[in-house]
Length: 299
Image 1 (cartoon, one colour):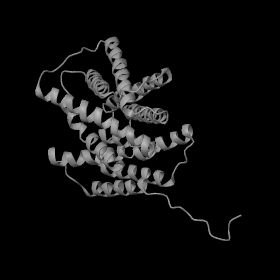
Image 2: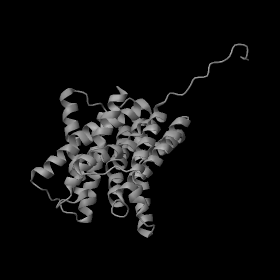
Image 3: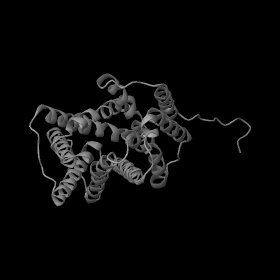
Image 4: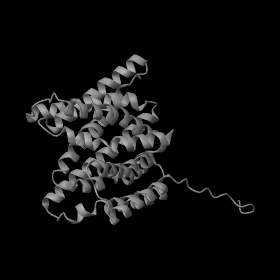
């Protein structure tokens, strides 16, 4: 079950960049995000109400859903989108992939979970691999004030994503399933971003064509309803640090799709990076060895 959810998340989020690219046009990015999570929330609520699976959420749970919506379905997306205007997308991907390490650290701080050495080693190896994958972008980008701004925004988005993971884990420990908390979280996230658009004077335009509507539906149903539910379920089942290794594999899937769709050419450094990412994946999911006590040495 875990493997299926893991592969599903990686494949879906590794291809959503195509839909995001198709969204670019007359509609402001922030408005498209409002449409995405607003529609996703409505679909989730409809599914849960029809099936009778919508859980009751008390005041504490609603406040956590509000915080989760702010972190996971609002601020982090705005941070990453603005960061991509200052630094290359490859650098944003590398920063975002530090989620594995941030989740391990936050799980230690907030839930007193022991940080597994294989998770840290695998996460670090994956980051090195991503650095190799995106080396042409990274080496061709000079350091500047804009770079610092982009890095700060990308890091802020990553920390918000990690915080959203911790909040989802907290909700699941309280017995609330991701389907219910995502429905509320997406609704709150879309509402807060909607208020931001109104205050900033961002027009609520819409493109009535197959390109925009098709890409929006892909982001709503597979990208949000299925993708976030699968990922946050993994956070509860596997732990935030292991689930977050998905963020290292997303760019790998994206580059493979790009090779088919856009003619991306694999290079030797990129292939080396791919090998390192996969080795990191093996390390992250390797079960720690259990050392059996030796007879005669027990106290």
